[in-house]
Image (cartoon, rainbow, N blue to C red; front, side, top):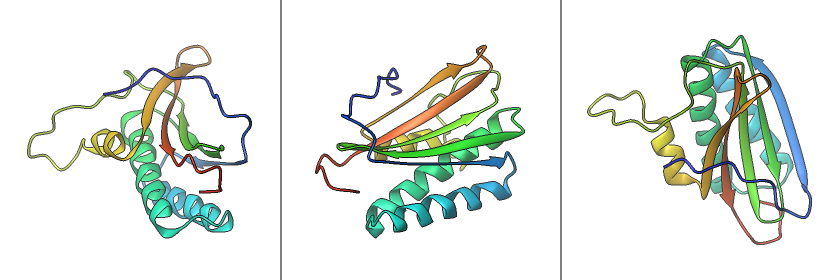
Length: 145
């Protein structure tokens, strides 16, 4: 179930990386690659890279498929206790929600995100048209990734 957005409580962001891409289906793979490359640079292990790649893929796919966006921004922010992935789009008719997809292969993205993350949520930005959908992975070690 979606949780309400919480203010950042880390003592400060250790690392931050953001990129903007056109809201095209081809951008989903590019977003995964950019996220994974950054995590390699940060020294993150393969398990966290795989998890983040999957979350980025699901959040970006939602922005591409379910909004009227021409572009999206993806941000990775690693704090002392968590890694936060956020995707800002230009908005759509309704906020993100988990839905029962039955046998359909589509529509399971947020179920996957919910299962992998310690928290996730969404918030409207600007004049209420764009939104940020975010997910957090707790690592709590005080060490990078």
